Length: 273
Ligand SMILES: [Zn+2]
Image (cartoon, rainbow, N blue to C red; front, side):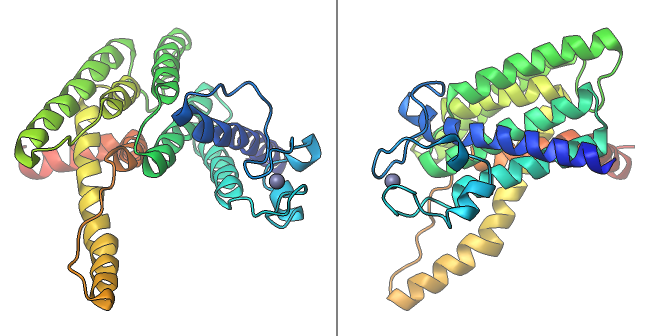
């Protein structure tokens, strides 16, 4: 990857990340991502273009609003930087190609879903519908030019959307019966429809398995030790916090896109062949 392409991709990625911030903060409240223009959530002052440059503006303003001096969340530059790095990595691995662009866009949408689900406990349709449309267009365009990369072809994309959404819905029902409360939201089903359309049927199922594994590892290594330590200091009993499953499904879909077939082959070789 030439330095020029790397810098250019980083700039595009950080601008996409800046737009993703708008989606993350507005879609959960059913607000438009086009109008009105960005304002400070504390004092309502409009944000000038030179204070709205990804990553750089937050740094030069030292994380404070120019109008009222109130702190601006570090989540904004973090999202911009993460998306920029996702774009550079996608183009570095898959080339400045249709595949590179598709991986970058999918990674962006999945990251937006994970952050929104963690913050607001919901997955806006804006992410999943645009992801499903992009997956469908990508599958057709990929078949047309004969470049699908790690993505499913058109037929497997349709199957994958149905299998992914169907499987997570059934697991949600079973979870509801077992736990006697809502285990999976409708957003998880639309997320799996979109992921399945990108991954195809086999890797859609693998995504759910990888997500469950990720959730178990995060619980055992992070949530439980920190949570029980804090509870002990306060002299309370440990109570597991609710973490929405979309937070795990989203990275699992990306892991499965890149490594899903090697993982499936490893498993089949070891246990079934
Ligand atoms: Zn302000």
